[in-house]
Length: 182
Ligand SMILES: [Zn+2]
Image 1 (cartoon, rainbow, N blue to C red):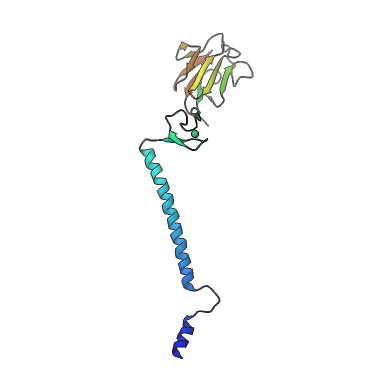
Image 2 (cartoon, rainbow, N blue to C red; image 1 turned 120 degrees about the horizontal axis):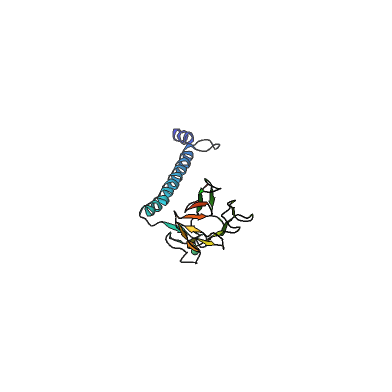
């Protein structure tokens, strides 16, 4: 009889969740949270180590293959990497102090309306110079101007621009930079 009473006393009422079930559930949730946190850290660490080792990579938006940043195109699918953003900084002339991002495939500068950049400068032709953006970089071309295009003091018909190049058309001067502004 006392044994039966003990067994009955040890059996909790049918209603409600036994305390040990709640403890086990809590432990499972904590273990899962810990596992997620560890997996997140493990997933992040190698990437950081790789970047520190100098092997910076680009993920191809077309096939998700990662390849070195130095490559101009994806070795898996041939996707061509666009050139880095660039801008012109006007250091002399009517647009002095302004910057223009070179986001379009072709940016044209001239005195006439309809150019990407309108330069109200008497020495600038209606369509003076164009800057073409392609995988190899940014190439400027004289569009048949009267007074020519000078890059670093030299009159040139075409040039693949390098950062720091100073372009002069008419009385306007601008510096080519390889990053986006704004
Ligand atoms: Zn690819």
